[in-house]
Image (cartoon, rainbow, N blue to C red; front, side):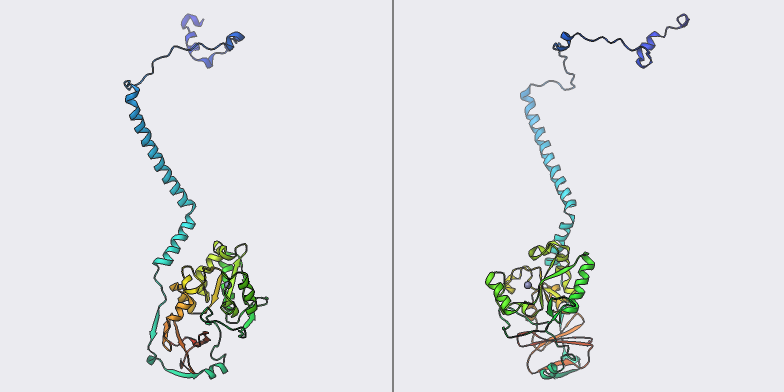
Length: 353
Ligand SMILES: [Zn+2]
């Protein structure tokens, strides 16, 4: 019937999916299957470029290859730099921070000589101070010990045990070490430990005999006074201490807790010690803040004091005096008097200004 009106066959043929009967399967004979296919005759490639002899094309190609090679190198450098900038973001920021801290940052804590005539002062004899240690805040926080100012085997210091531990340290340290320790735990989420604190003359002799390059000779170590602590974090001791968050925190902020890095980097000629990021030394306020802020050593700090002169450091009055009598303000809130092991005393006063 349909043929009468319209022949649909050509349309069906052009639309294979409409064809209901699959094409008949005709397996090719085996010998034909393995025989190599005859190569179709090569058709000339269509190109919009005219043909050139290869000798003309080669220089152009070489140039093109070189150009893309340069681009590849350029892109790779950008990718490597960009990738490392992202990957090493924290170390780069830390290095930049350290560089700024060492070379560009201006100290924020000053040291101004104070005209004592503007303050009402009184004289106190050393006997009076030694007789009332509590009244004058007598302590040992400012003792310096080095190759020039040694301590003898017979000297003893004000050593106590830290809290309920068996770690001995100078009495002057205890409360501020507790603050530093709590701050470390708070900031880093882990504890700081004490590897070595007080050492006797004989213990230092043993260490010195074992390694005279690293250990100080007996009598020249601050560990005798109990003012120095060798600290570490779990799995990070010695030079590796700096690789731990605790080490970084301690090296950056110990000045806020009364401690200094006693043998800082770059001051080997002054201290006679190589950099020891684990050896912290108590000096108290405002000395620790000033020394850290100015990136100086305890030796250099001592040198900044003219004897008997009062200085304002932060909100404190500080002077280094010697002799039988000492000038102190008539009124103040707190006083700290410490011998310095050179024959003088550091007098540190708060609440007098
Ligand atoms: Zn030490």
